[in-house]
Length: 332
Length: 285
Image (cartoon, rainbow over all chains, first blue to last red; front, side):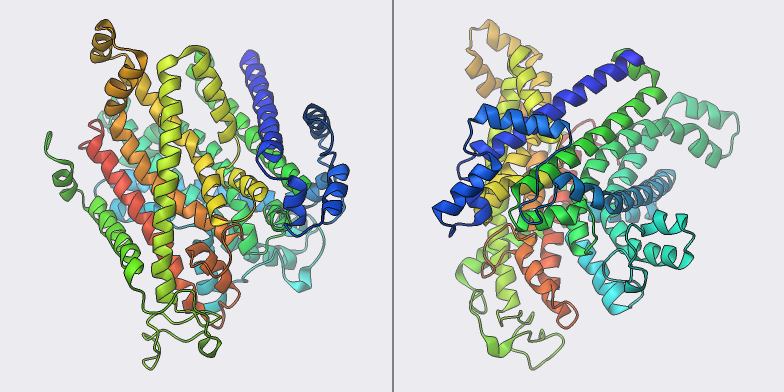
């Protein structure tokens, strides 16, 4: 297992280096001047030259990349053009909000995805199967921003049951609060307020992974239900629910675990949209505002940070996968 | 079932038919918009800002109402279908061609070429697609054309992976070995023997890819990385009207429904085609 972990860690480092090279090449080799892109087409040559000097764009390419890589290893992504603050500092300040949202969305997707997928497989060919699988296909098809807007229209503007954005109300505007923060402080009012603010963004962000997990659970479970050990369990006279949940589902979970890890990547990408719709003060919204401001160091740092997060999560899922299934370790 | 034409097998797949019907409506709206729209989709008329749709207000001159600067939403939605159709086709053709070529070469050549190409594509896939697209559009500058280029680049690895897997499967088959034994060149084997036999999964990927391309390009437009506001692009229309959602909620419904239905149509059709074209899935639900 140690050799497997080391090999996977090595692959992660190579991928991260590749992403850094890809990001650097895209910024420097694609036609167009990054400094001019940041300042806009109307900027004068003097301002462009000044920004080029500030960003080190006037140096040779290999020197620029060396400096970019050396800084990135120390998680130093430079300073944001807009706020003049270190990009890493900006990212860490917003990371808890994004982590809270993505974790809630993932828990929502896994719990409901497993439940829907299992019930659909158990009632294969029935009305529940048809409705839940068609709904999950619709879930994959509706763009994240469309679903978010529909939910806002219905539950925030129409029924006025839930807030239409933000992480908390004015009354609970305490720095670093959120769901966990308010719970640790023992402030139940703030906790309830944070939970209510989380509902719509969680459903919006979790809808696509929920749909994918439920479809994967269904097909994986159907395959498991056709295996000999399930027939043996049924022949022993076990109740159908015990056969389904104790025997078949446990074996059907392995591919579901893999897809769940990959869905984290979707969540991190989807967080840009969800956070921008719901004014959620996380990394995604910050990245979007940086894009609109053409703040290149912020974009590079933010994307590298998200890539690091995504790859770390995939690595953890791979290791879990290997721990659950010894065949993976043997094959590796 | 086996051996019957695709369209006949599709008739027995109700969800694929629903998808095809939704897409037929989308293509029809796009084609009609070339010759007719009720109003000029770009014409601003500040006297008729946020007019209600005729369904709500029978005196209204506008079937789906008007937006914040008085442009007809029905006309803009129809013109938006034309833009989305163009986006879908161009992205899928470009990404499909480049991706398939890379995948076929990687799968056929094997060895270091396969390793190198696949590692590059792995790195591209290590980033969430929308983020990679955002970076590309930021560098190229916001416009619909650049959003399409970004979505094309992001989509290439998907086609390459499908094509590589198929090439690996097909290249070990006897007819390929027979062609090689007869002295056919690698290029001829690739083009005449391998590519035509990889068509089925590629057709499925293209169908699903059209929906994704439209969705992602509209997403970039929604984030403000597409064309200027006067261009009737669905994502942009939603972004423009979102701030007036409290007083004029009807303005976002048509583009929102159009994007969702079109993507759903492509997904239903793609899923149906997968069932129909893949013999291993036939008979399994």
